[in-house]
Length: 94
Image (spheres, rainbow, N blue to C red):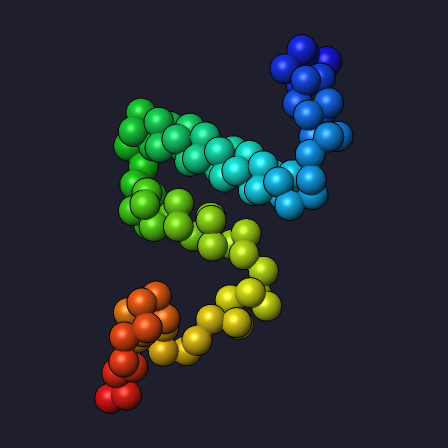
């Protein structure tokens, strides 16, 4: 095992669970970005065109990591009333 891995494991053993979860989420995010970058480089070097623009593919990959029950917690009018949910502005009831 590399020194960096060993040091990371030692640090994780001494870290609260909520911080470990954040670190795991960040690591998975970085891995997806790297995977996306590799795909993009392969796409740029080959004549094939992806079915979705690269940004949309990236968003799709990230959103796939969110459990369905978490998506279900979002208000159905979030896009229309985002200012209400973020800043407390009056809701648009139209």
